[in-house]
Length: 74
Image (cartoon, rainbow, N blue to C red; front, side):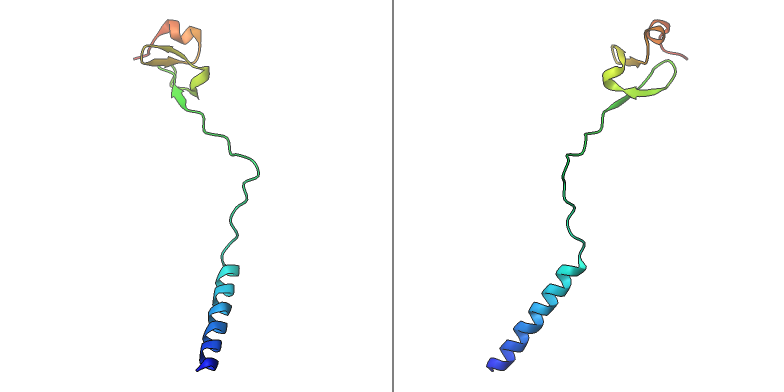
């Protein structure tokens, strides 16, 4: 009986080691990934630009002062 338990433990250990080395290693995060910057669409020319560089008028966003002056195109 002790021999049977020994072989079962040996096979289980070998299987566990085999599965462990078959799986890809977890990715090491050395540097934090930058967060995605939200973008908005210019109401005049439909260009996409980062929200922190856009100009807003109410609910509308514009890419430049000129487009903000011209307003939304139809």
